Length: 320
Image (cartoon, rainbow, N blue to C red; front, side, top):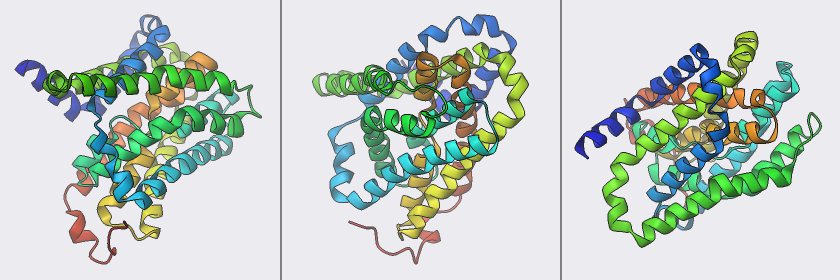
């Protein structure tokens, strides 16, 4: 068990590089990687079950104590990223399937690694956990509507099918995880240190499979698509921070909102794209998974050097 904990700690610390490595291997052995594509949704369900195991009722208490921060953050999550993904895709004249992929990434809930990044960035971790959890619970309803609204004129969108898929691979596993922790809390507490292995390993396989299945398309459109993904993630980080700054929220809250808006559940976007459109539509999500973990690590490293209180003496009081 001690060895597994050390491996899990290593995986969490080098998450971005491990994802980048899995993408590189997917390019090297695309045929073998593509064989795993049918398992993307199953892997995501396992990852979300693991997320549910980490949640407790107290994680949602911040909604009652600081509703303004939570509401503002979740609204930013589901407004900034979908519109930015669509706008960037149109501006760069991405083909329809890639445009749908960008919208799917933008309309996904917060990323599973965002809480760790917020912690490293000395941000408001409680707010980060609440935003991730609430956006995940809202995703079955908001994600299909946003994709239908923004991408429905580009390709046929089965909003009902998207709803069912998100219920199956996100909401049900998360709720099962919550139930298992409630029923078997003592046992779950013992395995919590190992859970990062589940998330990291699952996302590595998802990226490996999606990149392998789209290796030719990635090599053909790589530069433009990488630019689109970098711009999308940067817009989320910057506009999330700017929105919290405009509302005069404390620096720790600004950092949490920035990371939560900028880091998406790209695994979910990849699974939905593969199941409801085509493997090519999953490519933006795969690249986003690689990039946002690298950019998140860089942002966290920068912010970790300065305590929030030292940066925000004039930020005003925390909204209640």
